[in-house]
Image 1: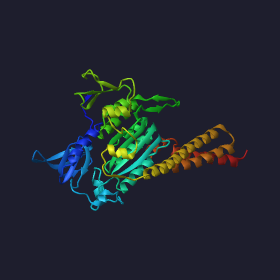
Image 2 (image 1 turned 180 degrees about the vertical axis):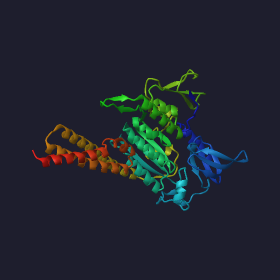
Image 3 (image 1 turned 60 degrees about the vertical axis):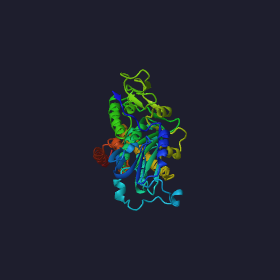
Image 4 (image 1 turned 135 degrees about the horizontal axis):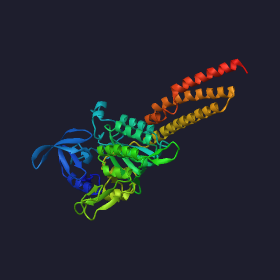
Length: 443
């Protein structure tokens, strides 16, 4: 099947910006929307949500209403264009409060990025290291909570990860979807391999920095012997879910297939010289000068150079700074929340890691005591092993309650059958009672 989707987030930003700049020299009044392809619409915005903006405008002198895809909009300005700005506009704002009229209800209902006080407010959230070892959902949950409470318009996840535990990646995706109507979500990739691609495709935009890589996401599962094998069935199910997520956020579905299924391919071609790149998963019917991005025997890892060339995702050609990110995305007036996202991530990832280590240590100790109980016939040793198991069982129950409250539902699900609490509570009490009777009976 040939995909005819023309990706709007391409490497033509400079052309669009130049066209938009030419339009902006004209003096007009009312709302103005600048599209990523350089088209400008002047008029009155009637309604807007996360997916679309409806503007009442004039086309060739005829008054009409147009529905515009929010993803194709470069900037939205409600202030008169061409008027002399106030002196206060030339300086950085001293506060970043919600302007009058934007109550909590207004913030919740408004689905496109708001420019509070004329500025977009960006929160950078780091996702660094391994999922489930260095990265935990709690840090994302509290970062997004802070963003909502502090009128953030855009959350920028800066990711540098080789992957890790799928449960952790899934929980982060769930959190992103939970807040998707509050602000725009962006993934800024320094490296996103394996499980890292799940939250990337859940974001509204994906941007790659110079030298970055993105992909290689075959799912692995562990057998009962402890050896790793590719679980093709599970991989196919996860790939299908990820395709649905990517498509809902405007990303190329064929890119997902090539990154997750080794038998999938992605080819690029142009209908006309210097035209936009189109994509297909087969060479059937393609022109002779098509290009292979990824063949059927490999799993795609997209490079920043490929991203720039084909426009599959956005790319930053020169650097990795938040300033360049804002420039590439057309954020003319913006402010950063500074290091708050990094502070939250450092605190919460450390807290979550400590909890997971306690959980795993408790399970190890419980099973070690069980082995001791089964390997000895001495009543005193068996009694000590049972008492220790009882203590570890109580610790396990407390930790699981804590994990539930720390935005880690998948880790709770994964460990909830590690110990059959009801069975072992009864078994331990029964065995301890039996041992007490034996001790009273004497030698």
